[in-house]
Length: 432
Image 1 (tube, rainbow, N blue to C red):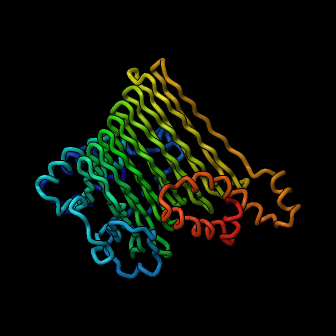
Image 2 (cartoon, one colour):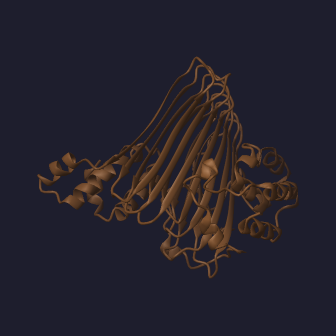
Image 3 (tube, one colour):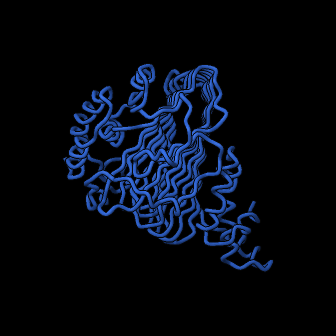
């Protein structure tokens, strides 16, 4: 085992969890010892190095910190809010929760039974090493259960705050969302940090089951300081006529890897997944998506766009797999990238693997730079080159931002992107 794997096992023994989770944790610890540590020779980790985890081993659990409020601003949304600081629940900053939203440690017998039914079972853990680690490390989590026919009138808003630690430290985060038949909900996951230089490793896993004819709107925002190390995943099962609309946005960091693993398990399921990634400086970000069509008459529409600046690196690997029984599938995958520096780098690999003969599928990827003609056109009308670059860059992702269904999320992102691009927000409004 690698040094990190051995340390991870030691950290697992220091966690205390509800007794009914011990079986899952014990099995995960056994599986973790069998894991082959990813290297550059591992296909799914070909362009993403884990050397930073080995060099700065997060040898302890992060502890709670009370001095974060001045650096963190929440999305201004009327929601059921749960706040975690360095992985520890902050009740004072959270709102009163409905009975359907509970911590694992507070789940009643009926809720425990539902959690055990789905937790760790949506995706095979041995295929995703950090999901196995998340199971072994689990001491707490959030359970969102939307009963049959119920519509959540307010979103569930989960905020994960990271703060500086005196020594490199680890955080484990877990969310399980189960929508029963004919139910509807909106879930916002927000990963943020204080402005200080971070030395936290975050392992964050979300599992989602969207039941028959249920609808889920899901957001996952990664706006952490650039030195944080974050490995995250979203594992989803879509049942008959289930509909999921997802949006994800990520700034880069020292290590930022996010996996989406989505299964069409019921006929008529629909997925609309959109993503934006914006690494700069010497940051990196890696998105891997894997959509599995197991049954007929399902639809996938997946669109990711990235702006890579300075000496940053981005990786996008999008895969859609059509199994033999998945006739009448409609699936489209698009990835577009804009390089704003001659030192910026992107590795994109859209994949379609089709074993059914009555499907309609398409995929594609582009890599481009800012148009010199468009830059000249704007400059000829009195706009400086730097301002023109901002307008053209933002216009590249604005189409996806304008499709964000939750106004509060959109209003939260726009001024922060203005700061990211280093210009006045009025320039971004001109790009609309």
